[in-house]
Image (cartoon, rainbow, N blue to C red; front, top):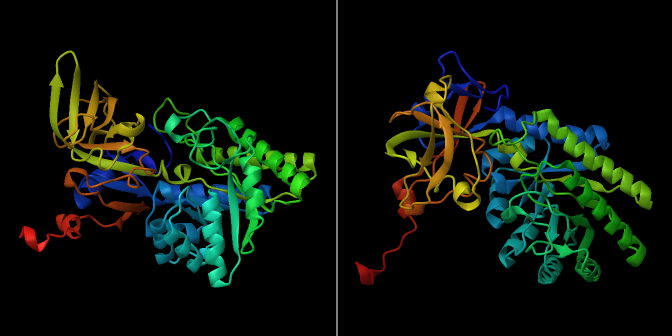
Length: 441
């Protein structure tokens, strides 16, 4: 098990998260339940923020990637930790603003921003908008002109770095819906185009090479390619890059197949990036740009634990044993989507030795509704509390009401105290937007 200080086994033999007994959380709030460790979240935000301040003179800003987990509490924490956020939809933007997050520290992403989302971003006066299409530049320029403002923008470029990760989360290979290829010349073409727009101020570039990456050199290579492109733009069209957003993608621990990176270990990734930027700028005679970094998963991923109650148990001799839980693909679709692996713990019997390998099945009417297939656990009983670790990123974010199941609530724990940050859904919440036409009554 990942052995960070705030995740441990207490004297009762129960899993403890942020000083709170997981079994007591399950009893108080019910299951399924998303549990988030506030201290872990703040520690990770602080490591990235402090590294930029100490190693790059504070000439940068950490942007929490909202897509990992978005709710008002996350934006409140980000604000108090003095970092920025990036958003990829009108909904994420609305949530950040509702939480009182300063618009100047919001960066708006998206490969197909809808016209109304562009309007919302402009009306909110977000700090940066990342352009990912020629048509988007047109709409942005027109809407900015209507408002009598000049919008600061970045352009998403594709440096052609292939990160060693799952194919579905690779975002900088030649065939990608994201960004403009440097190698093909598309990136230079969009730069020239945006520079003709009177109501857009091109600040620089953005890139993101993928997710769940542990190879430090992947990030360094991407930084080097971006710096080289910056130099080419200065030489060819006299464009000086002021800002560079190097995205995120730092991997986290899900199982013992992954490196166990202590919180401070993430400083190494950022230090390597900063060193590459400094060296590249020195080599090409460039002014060092203001840096942005977008760690989402690594800030919140390991901070999240999902609690379930074991229900039906079914053993197929010579094939497999299934533990069914009260959640499933509606609160965690990542195994179904990516074959993602997790570590499971019986929270009420966390100090017992494993006895069997089991699959954990959800309650949805789908044969593929599984949380995983190879969990090494003590012999489970109906009523046990099962904890799936490292579920803070892309679990709640991807949750649905499939089969009209309720999306679980989320609680934030710190020093043994727990509070809702997302309230439980009810059946009325599910049907409240249904409309029954008069002709069907």
